[in-house]
Length: 234
Image (cartoon, rainbow, N blue to C red):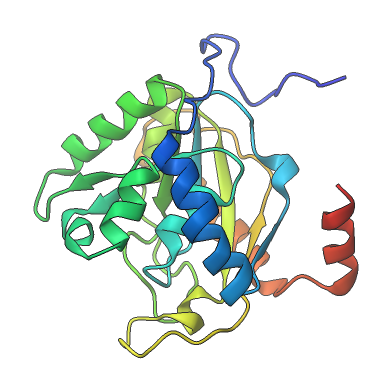
C-alpha cells in the first residue's frame, strides 16, 4: 500500500503531475536517453524518492550544460526549470530544455520575477528544477548555495528533493573542450521539508542542508556493481 507523503502539507491541494508532452517523449526516447544511457553509460539511483505527483522543488549541483536535459528527463516525471535566456539560443540544446518545460530568465531580470514564475509552475503541480549555486561550478560540487530553492519551497509549501549529478563537469565542463565519454550518473536523495518561514535564517539553514546532502551524495561516487544490480531489480 502506498503511504501518503508526510512532507506534503495537508493544507496544500493534491495536484496531478502535468503529463509529458509528445515533444517531451520524443526528445526523451530519441535523444536524451540514447545519449545519457548509451554514450555516457548513465543511470539513476534513488528514483523511489521522487514524488509521482504534486509540487516538488528538485535541487541539484551544476557542472555542465548537460545537466538541464538530464535533470529534466531522468527522474521519471517532467521537471521544469529556470534557465538563462542565452541557453535557448544554442542549437539543439534550446529545443531540448524547452521540451523539458524550461522557461527563460533574462540576464538582469529581477529575482522576484523569476521566483514568481517558478511559484506559478509549482501551483500547477510541476516539479521545478533549481541548480543550487545558480551557475556551473568547475569542480561540479555545491560551493556557494543560493537561497532561491528554499524560498520557492517556503512560498509554495513544496518539499525539496536533493539530486547529485555525478561526473557531468568532467564530461562537458566550462573549459569548452569536446565531450569526454565517461559515465554520468544521478543519485537522488530523500525529501527535505520546506523551511518553516521565509526569514533569512530559515532559508540559509535549508540551503546549507541541501548543500550538505548533495555533496554527500556526490562523495558516494559512481554506483557500485551491487547498487546497479539492485537498481535493475526494481
